[in-house]
Length: 265
Ligand code: KIV
Image (cartoon, rainbow, N blue to C red; front, top):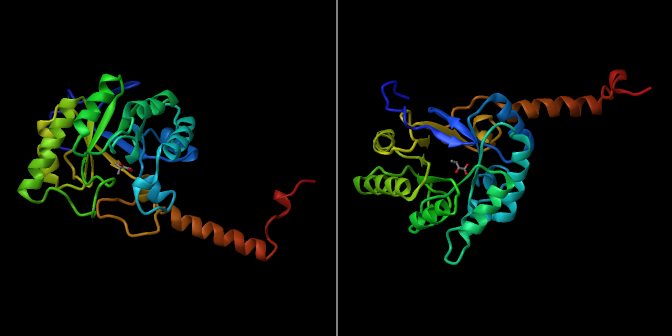
């Protein structure tokens, strides 16, 4: 974050006023939401990346409304003082004939503060429909996994970069209150952040966005696979879990657990 960045008018109003720089993290279950909320993260996203990191599925398009509602409800029970934003699953708004407003309302009625939608050709119309219906909408451009053919950095060519700038502006004009920039060069994210009046929230978009988001499983070291370059590992909970489970298994095998302290009399 540059100290001379014009952040002053880039607040987010969700349940209360939040000022940049925003720290957003994903959650898909109750305990994660409790800990994130307790730690004071600004925003919690029930991202459809839960398809990959929680459910072991290949694609985010494999989760629908029922699964996202199930996870959103669990997160809302744990995230007492933190606004919760939820990803609209692909089949809830992108295919022709999907009832985007009805589906978005289901999340808001549950207690979510806003929904997030990924860019596709009719995205501005869908955003307008949702905003006219009183729903707060976060946009998402750059690498948009619901429709991505590959997971390469986006916006490296002039043409693609101009397209992402245009999409960001269209989302702003359509009523989005913020936009996620995923996997774009830092200079492009900086340019978009400068032209937008709404905040940008970067993931793999460098230092100059108005906020940052990471997938919690990635930054806590719970992902067994290879991490993208943009993830900073803040903990190694996967390895800590292995060590704890090995110790427990050894104790059980050697009759050390349970001991007298864990035994009722
Ligand atoms: O689903 C998700 O976790 C997301 C983040 C990567 C922004 O959309």
